[in-house]
Length: 501
Image 1 (cartoon, helix red, strand yellow):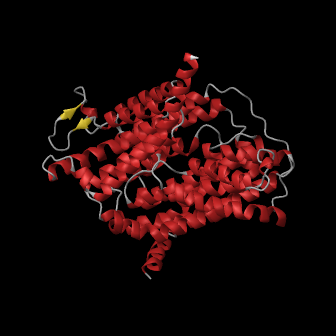
Image 2 (cartoon, rainbow, N blue to C red):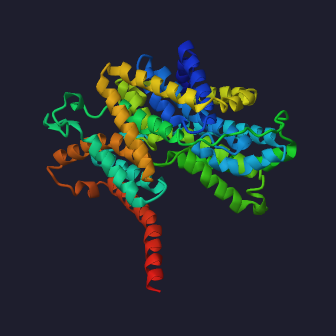
């Protein structure tokens, strides 16, 4: 009965005119950003964080959430039509979606992607609503060492899901943790790594850092790409799939929904991991695996369902534990902190309208996305014709105005510029910014819980191992780290033996 009361509160919150408007703006912008390659929801949310400061927290978070799961819809459009994923999680969709488009089935592929995403999004939101309270009650039993160990697991998982060198992933995390220590010590009031600059007394501005490391660096990388993109000339008028298509897509949609719902909750998980895992599962269980890569319907329906489910269930650890499961959730935490709200297990009691409003808005947003996406496919494709020399300067200008408007401090613009240049340099070194951002956001929180634990235990560090929850989380982190390191060790061994031969 309590669940229905909470959902009623969420409906009441969402159907306030400003929240309904922001839900629509979020899914509309998310779809548009998903269509446009190179920007992505991370950069968009980083750009819009300053704007949300002047609006109620419910409207702000509803819009930012809509951008995230809306981008999963939009990314499939260009992946299917022109073999160009607008969002990283749609890269798998392009494999078979583009082949279907070449066979004259673009409308079918787009419709199945939208249907699968809608079903998965609704189911994932239902899971959040059902398990939110039990997870929150569990989180309330967490002690300071448990929280610290949970954050360690989250950081290790971010290494596991990062592409490229494990060593570079660890370096990025440590670098992020170091950047998080800049500012005034919470317990002693001592300035740390501020170099005498008053502007760093409260730490590196998270807005300037986030906008620079993602939005600005992505634009700098985008300026290098001068490849012309021509939309696929194909008939997309027939949007209704046949009964045979629906039968082929049914089980992949269900499997992708369940898989994405589970993987989205895990630290470091989310839409991209879910879509890749779903594609591998569908290829393994298929009776005709040879059709994958040549226009398999399951190769579109499964991953598209999984990435949307993963995107929405990734809100679970952020809302219930206050722990971001991926870089985008880290920016969501930043959005709440800007509003003076501390994410965590007390959020559901202190801000019930915000908590349940965001959850219910996902249902409304998914319905809006189905209505928006299919009729506006022509518009989304035309967005690809916007020239970069018009688009990128507008984004940079909008970012600078937004970052400056929060504190009206030119130093924030300096941070944005330096972070953008650093992000661009890191991309050239094949270092992903995701572990860096997670380390930067989680670092101060980890320090607080670690020092609080040491104060309560009288300096006895064994408390991290005597607490059952903390011990379990640390063991899980160690297992994940070993799994990540094994391929690297085997590759090094193979290289050594080859050299000896």
